[in-house]
Every structure is written in C-alpha cells, then in structure tokens.
Image (cartoon, rainbow, N blue to C red):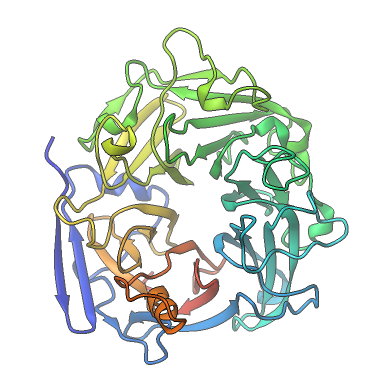
Length: 463
C-alpha cells in the first residue's frame, strides 16, 4: 500500500498542486457533467488579493456578504462568530437563501442572539443565521434562524429545502453552564425559521454530530460523528418513520443504526484506493440518547462496531453516499496514519469502497491535507475545504484526479495577535468551511471560519 504523493508547484503569488491517485476518481462525480479543464492548474494560479482577504484565479471575483461583529440586518444583534457549515436554497425572483452554522462554544466572541420562538437553551451560544440574497448576491436580509444550541458544525440540506444543523458536542444540562442536554440535530427552515422553531430531533441520536446526507429515493439519513480522541466516531444511518415526509416529518422519530464493516474495527487500516467491502452490516444503536454511555462506547454485541477518526463531510451523489475521514494519527490512537480519506457507500449493494486517500506523504504543512467540508460542483468535480496547518485553501478536484487551488484565505490570524502585543508566531490562517453553490450554479458561497466571513465567488465557471 503505497502512500499518496503530492507534487507542489509554487511560485511568487501563485500556487498549483496535484495528487496522484491509484483509484477510480470518476465515480466520485456520478450524476454530474464532466468539467472542461486544461490540466492540473484548473482555473490557473491564484492572484494575490490587494485587500488581503481572498486570493482567487484570474477572472474570478468575490463579494463579502457578512462578517462577524457587524450588525444583523434584522436588528436582533451582531453577526455571530465561527462561520461553519452552510447550504443555499432557491427563492422567488432569482433570490437565494443561505443558512449558515455558527460553531460557537461558551467562549465565543459573538454569540448567536436569543430570539423568542427560536431558542432551544438560553445558555447555548451557537445556532444558525439565514441570509436572503438577490440575483446579484446583494444582501436583502440577515436574521437568526435558530439559537441556544452549541458547537453547530456542519449538517446538510433536505430534499424538501430545509437545513439540518448538527451539534458537535455531548454536554449535558448542568455542564459548562448549559440548562439542557446537547448533541442533537435540529431542522431549520431557511424561508421562515419560525415554522421549524428549535426542536431537537432526539431519535437521530445524541453524539458529536458533524454532517448528514439524505438518500432522495427513500429518505434514509446518513450521519457522521467527528470524534478526535478514542473511542473514535461512527458512521450512522437513520431510518425515519415518515420518510420524505417534508418539513417537520423527522420529528416523528425512527431507528438509528451504526455501520459495521465485518473484520474492520478501524477504517484507518485501509489505505489502498479501490479497496471494497461487501456485506456491510447496520447494527441498531442500543441507546440513541446516550443517557448513561456515549453511543460510540455502547455495547454493539458480537462483532463490535467500526470506528474512524475525524468523520466529517458527507454528501449524496448518484446512487451512493460519500463521507470523509479528515485524518488519522496513530499518536492519537488510530490503527494507522493517513491525511484524509473519501469513502463511498452503495446502499443497494451494501458495498463500501475507499475512493481517495489525500496526501502529502512527506510534509504535513503542504496544502491538501485534512479535507473537511466537501460538495459537488455543478460543472463536475468536487470542492473541498481544507482544515489543516499553514495556508488554508478551497481545492477543486477534477474527474481525472487533478487537484487545483480555487481560493486561499489571506486573513492571517497571527498578524492580528502580533499587532495586539502577542509574541511572534508561525503564520496561521483560518480554515474554510461551508462551501456550497447557488441553485443556478453561477456562484460559490464559502465561509472563512475565523474571522467569521461569508463570501460569494463568481467568475467563468466552466460547464
């Protein structure tokens, strides 16, 4: 099993990258059109932004939609911190509705303001905000969509155009100042948040949720669990009592199950792309609410259960669900090391396949390690948010397995710390998150986590 290798092509003000893959990359893009690319450079080198916010290829431009600390247009307070997962929904007259997570913990600089009818726990600092944009990406409105939650990391859209926001925490009432248990999924209506309110979908489990994807054919919801430390997270499916029932139907409950790969207790040991496992099993979760024991520590009976470190991005493509293991480190207790995996599960065949292993194999400071949020691009290919060390990028990945930089965050966190009187440190930039596309495919929306900034990126997207 040879390690994936990355070759870096670097120059002044520009950066290109490519990854050598051993697997069949085109299967990642089932159901999309092929992108017309001109080699591993994608859209060309990144051009330094004179305003020091976002580097993009020539011909692309950005608009800043929202920044943390600014006033919400609704008058409800300030724009919260820690912009994370996000999705775009179609509106009337060419409008776009964005729902944006805020991964706020108790030390967040700007908490999500509490709003009557939209607040779960008054002591919870997290939640979501909703933006309404016109056809030119001008902000028409910005408001609280749900409040009183905690550590809202990622989530995913539903086929009926709502957003499922996921809490990546397991704090109970009485811990860290919270008045209610946390670790749930909540449904958010991007058009009128009061229609969904702030109701935890308890049957979908209480654990360190990351992302979800829904099978549009039968309504099965797949869920990832982002656990950094052992015992690592699990990959779940939720079988709803009212599949594809529309807004509010998930509150009717269902059955939560966890994936077992027979003979494989830790997915990190699999490092050869194309490796396939048939006969995947789904084991009922003994106690989805984790009343006494965290789900990943519960007794799943003979054969145990399959774990993986840092299960993050999740999306549906074609007839399969894809999910990301951001990295695995033996020093943290993983069975083996890798810099990021993408897995594909085919429900009809009950087949699991390792599709991609990210590099580099020699220098973890180089870009392309630790994939996080991931989405299908409308013109073919993937967009991947990087959450690693050093410079932070949004990378594109073509059908041919070519990786190219699409954006680079220029907001240096260490410069701000030094200016405030802190000691000089190695450069550090905030991660990207929440990459998503407008319904017409003409705009890429993406968040900078810190300082919280939401961008709209337009340009010559190839069809």
